[in-house]
Image (cartoon, rainbow, N blue to C red; front, side, top):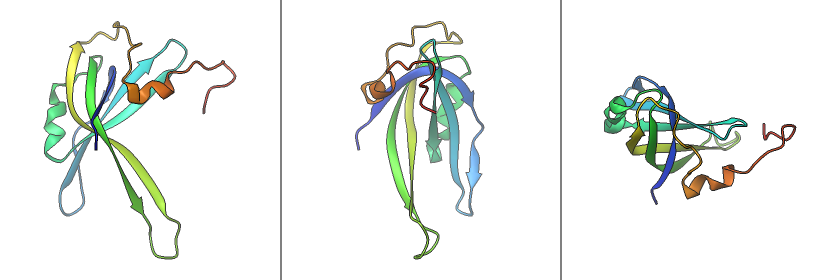
Length: 126
């Protein structure tokens, strides 16, 4: 798997949550990219031993986060519908400027360029 990077302003830093009997841990952060017309919110998860890495993040920080995509298949039983899930696992980050949000948000990693197109006010994709 290749590692990619995304840049944005931290809008959410959740506490670490523990799931299941084996103690699986994950910690959600959300980056916001704002092109002046609408906000693009990007959820990223720090998992397992990497959860404490997010301790250095603060809401309002302009950051660049390295992440990898991971997907999984889920099916309740052999006769039920198969569902696929995708998540972005944060690996590391670099604070570009603290508490700002005033920095230029126009530079986005190439993996996210497909989402940087302009939309007419009546043609928002949701």
